[in-house]
Amino acid sequence: MKIAIVTDSTCDLPNPIVEKHGITVIPLHINQGENTYLDGVNLSREEFYTKLPEFRPSPKTAAPGTDVFLKIYEKLTNEGAQAILSIHISETLSATINSARIAAEQFTRIPVTVLDSSQLSLGTGFLVERAAQMAQAGNKLEEIVSALQELMKRTYVFASLKTLEYLRRSGRMNFAIARFGEILQIKPLLHMNMGKATAHRTRTQKRATEKLLAWLAEYAPYEKLAIVHAGIQEEAEALYEQVRSFFPQDVVSIVQITPALGAHLGVGALGFACISKE
Image 1 (cartoon, helix red, strand yellow):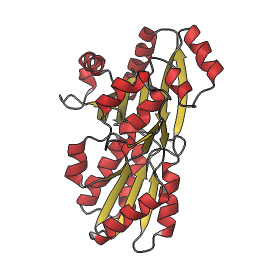
Image 2: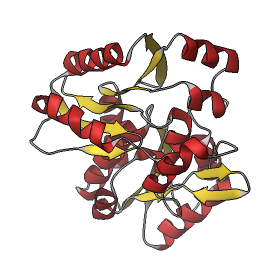
Image 3: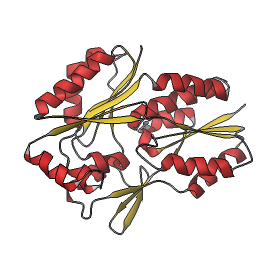
Image 4: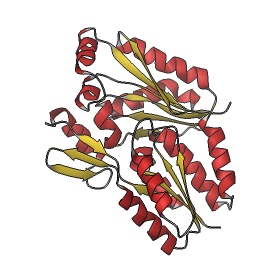
């Protein structure tokens, strides 16, 4: 059975991997004033992070509509897919998967399975990549879903933010709390596993980094590991030099997170996406 793999642009998979495995990526929408962009299509990551501090009003994100998913499912069916596995950012963070579920219910030509990755960024991306590899190897749909559900338990994303300002601007945090945090120089940390996003805080950037490194050591060794960042490539490279012994292979894996996530996390977000071996 030919199984097509669909995901969304928050997965942060590099284009060579997407193309190698024939993965279909549906872009989220980024609305900035009167302008609307398709995430990863007509707005580059470099351009976005350069302009983000000056954007007024602040950019907002929106999930693709059900019609977008229906068109993609139709296209893949016409190209010979016999089943579709649609894997998306955690429903605790985005309405994207709801659009996919509605489309899957309406689409009747071939079976469509919608799976909540319980993750974001490369946490989702690593799962999507594994699904595509298994589909190409001839695994059955139920085997792929079962394998991903096991991997989810060992998949983590954790990062520090330079500021609470972008969470406030995007409407994801109460203004008074954001201002209070800035006054006290609180450095927020985000941790994601199995659909549960938890927030932690420290008083300094140094302590925030120490907490990231503590998590990194806690979940080692790794099947997959990458550094994710928002517009701070040099800092990401410096962090890699500090932690390169944790990487499964001596390959630099640094990915700039997509604008659809960066709009909320802001310039300066830095952390890790990983799949633990145990």
